[in-house]
Image 1 (tube, helix red, strand yellow):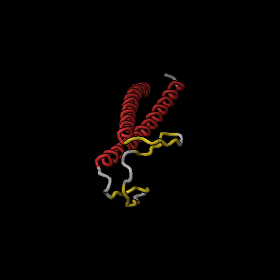
Image 2 (cartoon, helix red, strand yellow; image 1 turned 180 degrees about the vertical axis):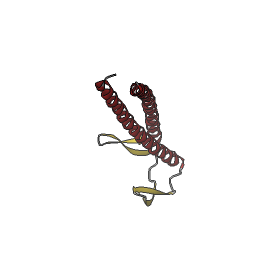
Image 3 (cartoon, one colour; image 1 turned 120 degrees about the vertical axis):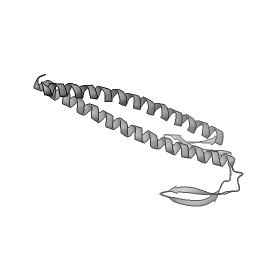
Image 4 (cartoon, helix red, strand yellow; image 1 turned 30 degrees about the horizontal axis):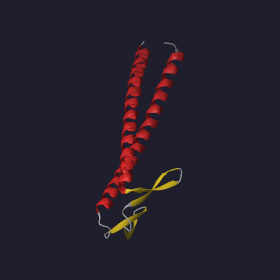
Length: 135
């Protein structure tokens, strides 16, 4: 293997490593979003179970909560993207959240599979490079 091939091999290895890092970041984001969706699902389940006169803590962000109550537990307002907000029943919102959780799980599975394939290719390339250095 000549000098150009060795250089190209190392560049390919670097590209594969960069791809793996980017994909791992995507997996981390998906896991975080899945945790958030599961929290939303639990909240919707809790609202569905309550009788309407319980006091609840309403999250404002950064660990700050406001005490409040639920006036209408039949409908929730959801952001469905692009700044569009719609009214949904609790069961409709739960269904949508569950669908999103499944989609995220499938996408994470695909990414993980692709990462495995890239890792195998990277290992083969590393072995080739090691053999070349010994020659």
